[in-house]
Length: 500
Image (cartoon, rainbow, N blue to C red):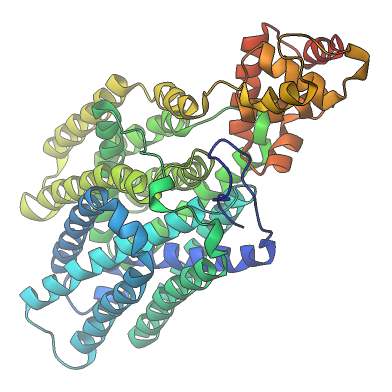
């Protein structure tokens, strides 16, 4: 598991060190992060904030989320500094997160601290949470992508189970202790894994590309998804401990669906926009049906929304990490740019739900109208955006769209016959492919894919051989076919054979 070889140009294949045995550590460590995150999300109704009322707990959580937003904005502005000093952020973040757990323990078994002190502690907890997630994104962005999707999906599923195990206890002290272990396990695992990556293979900050910025419409769409998540978590928390626990656990249904995309691999071409389009009807339906439901049915509405949002979240986690690695994007800046609008939406959705449930206590027709308005905002924002990631994918592909003449320059110089074709019968498969790459102006990476296609390999094999994602291989194949003016692998092999 390594990133890029600094001794090669950025368009050369990336050298990888096999750290496969550490994938288990990565999955367990990431599961601790997810378990910690879910515990924080549903904190108002689980043991972490059992010492105060649900209303006060939601206020503390809203303060923590606002701190998350501010932290991600700051990380986006100071991304280079964060990337270079991430090892120092880990112990600080661990300490601040554990302070929140200690404060809950003291408030439960000694005496409740002033609310202003608790609010300050939870603001620091939000900073710690953002720092931890950013460090994990950096780790997944600097290791080869062959197993990234499976590690993240498995970690998310296990983390959801850990959330249930940690909070499904009547012993508050035991739950707090286990929450502290989740924090320590998450931070310790990413610190351990980061130190096992050969230092010389980790890209320097000046080698990272600027990440394509989210468009305004895309940011609004991401924020609306976050708003639904924030609204539903407050709604579930307001219904009590059991509802919050079931709602948090329901996310595993959406996570398990991610394994379907992993299994299909190169046979499908999906991105975050496609996944958002799939989940949008479930989100809207859950919001619209909520006012007409009560008890278990209302909890079910929250679970449907949470499953859809968990599916989108996990897919975005690994697709972002894979793009960061394969296109050498700045992981801190790109992750912060995507998380800031999401958590801002979560903050606004939480405030909206708090006002409806606790301040106005809306019921009946008034609640129906409020939910209908909320649904209209979500649908309109997504309709304007369209859930179309093609522009973003095109901008990512442009980062690799460099003329591929360098692939065959060495061949031309070696033959000393620049401008003349060598004897076709003397050409090896690699040389024939090099001349095809030059003739059709393929990029260096497309030249590598061309050789494997000419050997009859499929997209899944190529993805494994080049340690890239199947979606990226499909993108390369599409560009090769387009440049060669063909629509089949057999025709590609025929063109290469013409040089022999």
